[in-house]
Each structure stands twice: as structure tokens, then as C-alpha cells.
Amino acid sequence: NVNLPTCWNCGTSFYQPQYVYAQNQFQYAQPRSSNMDNIGMIVALIGLIMSAISVFLPYVSVNVFGYSQSENLFNNTSDAYIILALCVIDAIVLICRCRTFGIDTLVCSVILALLGIIHMSNMQDGINDMGDYSGFAKLEVGAYLLIIGALITFIGGISLCVNQVNKR
Image (cartoon, rainbow, N blue to C red; front, side, top):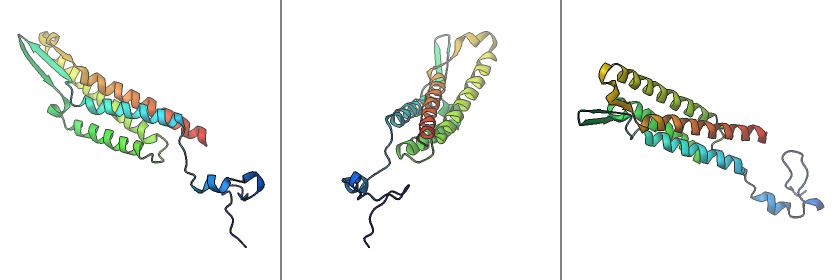
């Protein structure tokens, strides 16, 4: 009685005539990802990188009588560390290809978008509170880049989720 390799699903032996080279094919079989998985992962990683870069860029700037001042999230709040941690952790999960079915990427993108919207709203309220001088202040690229990065990450997460559902 030789213990022949069999299919885990149906129990068919790989040494049957129609499976002549099956031992070599299935001996080192690894689950393979589709091209759409790779595209979804790359799109999500691009969005995460954009979101991580946004915390270093100016969020708001004020130009008054030749004086210019800009602020980023590191100057105003500790949320910059939360955004960076979310981006790094989700990027590690994506790169390691953990079996999260893209749910972690969707959750991360929603949290990033909410943080971006909250900060944009707070900074816009601060600009509006300046009264007559509100024309001298404006939101900068960092505020918009976080929202755009979160949306791109969300699109990548949806792509990953759809591909995982289609594989089942």
C-alpha cells in the first residue's frame, strides 16, 4: 500500500493516466494571485503612499502683508502619527498578502478619509473665523492629497474584495 498523492477536494489520485505529470505540477503548488489582485494591491499601495506623504505637506497657509506661514499635520495635531501608522500597517498587510480579503484596506481608507474630512473641515472653519482676513488663508495640497489618497486606497480595496469574492 503506497500512499499516493490525491486531490484534497475530490480524492482523485494524481497518478492516473490523465495526470501523468501531476506530481511535478502539484508538488510545489502555491496559491497564485491573479493579475487583478496585483492591480488592486498596487492601486491601494499608491493611495497609501499618497496619504502618508500628505502629512508632511502643508495643509493650510496664510499670506498676510508679505508674511507667509504654512502648517502641516505634525505641527497641529497628533493625528499625523495615526495616519502614518495606518498607512504603514496596511501597506505591510498588503505586501505580505495576508488573507484579509481587502477588508482591512477598505477600513483603513474610510478612516483616512474621515480624518482628512475632519481636518479639512476644522481648518476651513478656522479660516472662516478669521473674518475679513479669511481671504489671506487657504487650504493647501496636503489636505487634498489625503482625501485623494484615501479614495484611491478605497478603489484598490474594492478591487481586492471583488476579486476575492469572485475566486470563491
